[in-house]
Image (cartoon, rainbow, N blue to C red; front, top):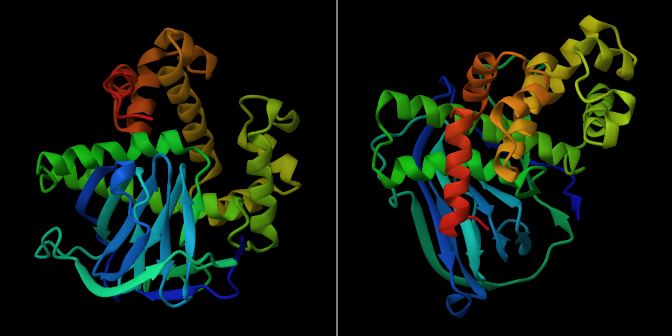
Length: 326
C-alpha cells in the first residue's frame, strides 16, 4: 500500500505539550463475537491501537474506505477523525491520551458514536497525518504518522505499553511517578511510530533523512553491513559519508534523538530480547552488549525500559506463563 499524496494536518493548540494518559486497556474479542461491520465514531483525544494477534480493520471517513490491521501493526487515530473500528476477533491493546492535558475529561467520555454503519472496503493508499507543534522551530521536521503502521519490534511495543494498562487497571494514573512514566512512554511511542513509518516507506524523507534511515536499516542486517555489532558514532558518520557534526545534526533531525542515545537504546533492546527469549544469565547478556559493569548496565536498562533487567525478565515470563502474551 502506498502513502496518500498529502497528509492531513492536525492542528495543536498554541500551548506547551503536556501528554496525559486517559485510558489503556487490553481487549480480547472471541471469534464468535467478531463484528464485520463498523459504526462510525469520533474521539476527543488521541488513540493508539496495537493489534497483538489476528486482525481487524479501520474505516477512514474522509477517504471512504478501510485499512486492514494485522498482528504487529499499530493504528494512530487523532481527535475529530471520523472512523469506524471492526473487531474481527483476537487481541488488541488501546491507549487513549492527550497531547494537551485534559484531566477533567473522564475515560469513556471521549467517544462520540453514530448510527452510521460501514463495511470493509480496502483503500489503495494509506491515510497519513502531520503533527507540528506551534512552538517548534520553523525548520524542524513535523511528525508524520500513518493511520496504520507495521511495527519493527512489536514485542518491545507490547512491553513498553503494558505498564500503562497496569496503571489504568489500578486507577493509579494521577500520581507524579505515574504521570512521568506515562509522559515518557507516550513520547517514545509517537517518536518511534514515526520512525517505523518512515522505514516502511509510508513517509517520504528528504535526502539527508533518507541517508540516515538507510544507515539505520543496515544496522539490522547480519553483521550490521560491515559495521559490527557495536559501531561507534564515528563509524556511523563515516558509513554515511558525512562529517561528524553534520551527521549528528542529520541523525537528530531524522530519528528524534542523537546517535549516541540511539545506539544505547538499540543495545538495551537487544538485551531485552535476550532476557525475554533465553535463559542466559543477566551478567552474560550485559557483557555480550558491551557492558562490563553490571550495575551500569542495570541503570541504563532501567532508564530505557522502565524496569530492572531482573524485573523485566520476571514480567515477561509472567506474561508468557499466564497465557496473555501471544
